[in-house]
Amino acid sequence: MTGRLRNNRKTEEIRSKVRETTLEVADFIYPLFIEEANNIKQEIVSMPGIFRYSLDRINEELDQVVALGIQSVILFGIPIKKDAEGTESWNDEGIIQKGIKHIKTHYPTLQVIADVCFCEYTDHGHCGVLCDHDVDNDLTLVNLRKQVLAQAKAGVDMVAPSGMMDFAVREIRDELDKNGFENIPVMGYSVKYCSSYYGPFRDAADSAPSFGDRRTYQMDPANRNEALKEAQADVDEGAEILMVKPALSYLDIIRDLKNNFDLPIAAYNVSGEYAMIKAAGNNGWIDDKKVMMETLLSIKRAGADIIITYHAKEAAKQLKMEND
Image (tube, rainbow, N blue to C red; front, side, top):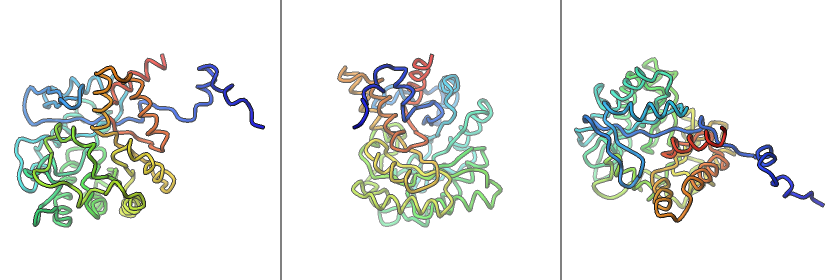
């Protein structure tokens, strides 16, 4: 005969003592969109509460981030100039390189992670060099080396290749190591699905593909076993952290990686997941703060050690209120 299981739920005091999963502000990485311009603070219509900033105004956001105890940000850049290969991504005076230098100068304790990809920088919106209307994997690897080296020279703390190119982690790890940046970790977008949940991000970063989609390089949402192969490849190539993206519709994949790999697991709570909660909350259909916290808790419970989320500031405020 089992005991009375409800007895462990009767009061908040006992519920808190037997709680299996908890959220902490240290779990969160906050995405930032930095635009190459001046005097920009532009709200992203499909992502209420999230803004694009120019560097001369980014401190407005960073002051809040630091005050809330958020320890890490991941940067996405929106350049003025775009071309077929995304050459601005490895310009030493490009927007992300300037952003890294600015943050490390003014907020030296903040961990700065750089997204390593080309979709924000190419005039066609795809994640690399095009050949015959598809991304050429190996030509793109050459440019990934250039991009990650520029970020490392700017002072980045961690890099995160997101393009799903085969051997990307291997090439990046080699480029960092041979240039004396062996202490910069790589967080692989190890399992990144070709998802419709990315729509609002493409508004935020001006990165929608001008033709077709990304199914030839991002994963098929129907595939589960393939995720383990992709994650194993990143492990073999030297990644220090594995990521699943998106998070909420792929909780099973997060758990699979947690069960099979002895590395930290990150999950990206993506723009569409954020936008749905915000839209429903703004319409009064749900209590968006409670749903936000339940969503983040589900990602942590599934096995994520790290959560990249646009909710980071709100969630940090909520956790502070609950702990005060």
